[in-house]
Length: 442
Ligand SMILES: Cc1ncc(COP(=O)(O)O)c(C=O)c1O
Image (cartoon, rainbow, N blue to C red; front, side, top):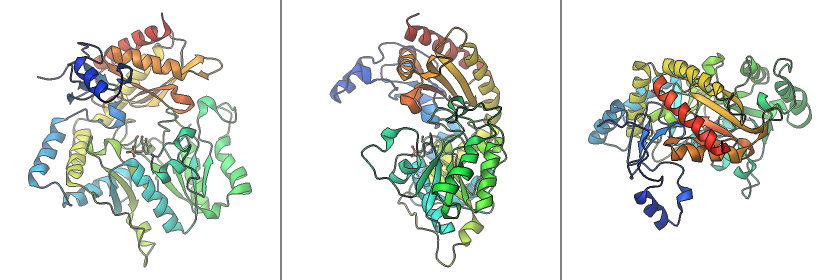
């Protein structure tokens, strides 16, 4: 029978989950993300029969919905043929990824996590350019391995106790216009944050000819869904071109239709030199890829690019799942649905601003949306405690949503599977509305 929801039978947690938590030394308050008994479409059913709407696609992974039959079939077929080592399908997948990211002919470095392709790109950019330094952005999230935390910058807890991190990493201010670090207005700022790289960084503490790469997220995800204004990415591309710096575009969260296009940079028509993919790429089978043009690679002859070999590179299950994922996104026109239904969802979220003063801002593209929770709309004081309470109230009502972002997690991450319908959006908004009332004691 097809899963439908949301349904809350007991708890959450109900008795089965409560027992498991207790045995693991945890309490009911630790149950804020559903344990999967069965997952299908936009729903996750837990062992007690509670069915949750997965409003975050399990961290932007289930873009095609959980357990899409075509993805399941592809995995099962591959499983019966052999599931370790590499297949010819890896080469056809590389071709498709090259096409998708605008890099043909391309070379793909395979891995299992977004963090690992960021590690690869740090090495590759240094090797290709022969330069030692990296620029990344405040607010960025590139993963949790040592190189990735070094270039990330969204929360000091990422690096506390682990420093010193990678040397030669310099953080520039991102276009987080809702809380502009320069206190400018987006209409009149003239891209002060980009000028800062040229006028301050390059002139005072990092020589541009010693910068190998700029790492950028097209839309900053975990910091709280910041979308740079028009022409910002183009300006960054130009700046990189002017100084022979590689532009590494981290599309780990934004690609595969999430923002209404196959890759988010298509919104700005900007081509990265290395494009990083992961998360939703194989609908839940761990799989990631760094895609770069073949001629860049060849430029490092006779010494090849750094070895980034990993035991499970190009795993057949991931390759089969990725092909099927791309087929589903194409055939079911999920980019179009993300754009259309995302627009509808954004409108419904904006409507919630009227009754709920705790919403400071609603922003995003396609089905990558963020709801900023504040103590005071004028002052924009972050309210991570309220954001956490809203998520907890939503969970009790069968809606799985997480608060994320800098300042202790003050934004709600709204990123449902791209198959979500308007009716399901309406249901989610109804629960969010109730949860906000509950959280504010209204
Ligand atoms: C933009 C971006 N890059 C990299 C990563 C790290 O990916 P992973 O968790 O698969 O290592 C994430 C994870 O959230 C991400 O959002």
